[in-house]
Image 1 (cartoon, chains in turn red, green):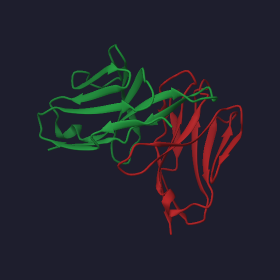
Image 2 (cartoon, helix red, strand yellow; image 1 turned 120 degrees about the vertical axis):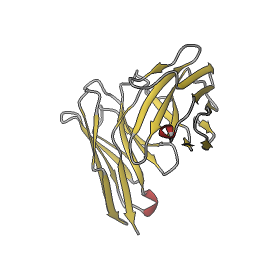
Image 3 (cartoon, helix red, strand yellow; image 1 turned 90 degrees about the horizontal axis):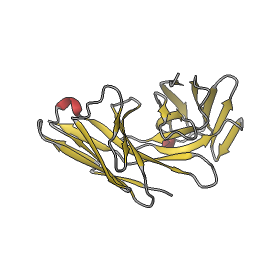
Image 4 (tube, chains in turn brown, orange; image 1 turned 180 degrees about the vertical axis):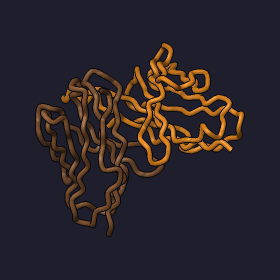
Length: 112
Length: 119
């Protein structure tokens, strides 16, 4: 019940295209859903996060779509750039918990 | 924003020796820090939760005598890999969560990670 399932494992997108990464969860107690970006040899960095009281959140080229009834959330990267090439992790936690549950990660490659 | 600094960023050690990794919260106090291990092309695996002034809580399967965690102050947690062996080679990452102002959630900040290679 603590798992967060992420897909796809890897994704190749042309420059300017849309990258979409999906995550699904089981634990209905989760109420905080962040996405992290990780470059090789670096720690993860928070990209964008959403709480279940909204269905969408947009920050620049990054958008989270959240479907509470389906227990799914996704990251959309618009106008993908080669500099976006990285590994992306979704995560979830309860607001009061200090521990994050991570998805398995998606390696995104944006071709120039 | 809040910064978590991890040191060293990489270390090579001989098999059988011990290695200490430091994790500092630079502009906030962290009563709780987390230590993760990450293998190539895999997700972050939580190893233990470090609590200031008390014993760390280890995840199932993590040897507490091998991975010693000390959280002696509100800004510093250390992970010591004792009697390191090649199979301990991995990327180790620390994290701290603080309450994001006005958001009512605990936001996680991660260190830069430490690449440990045991030869």
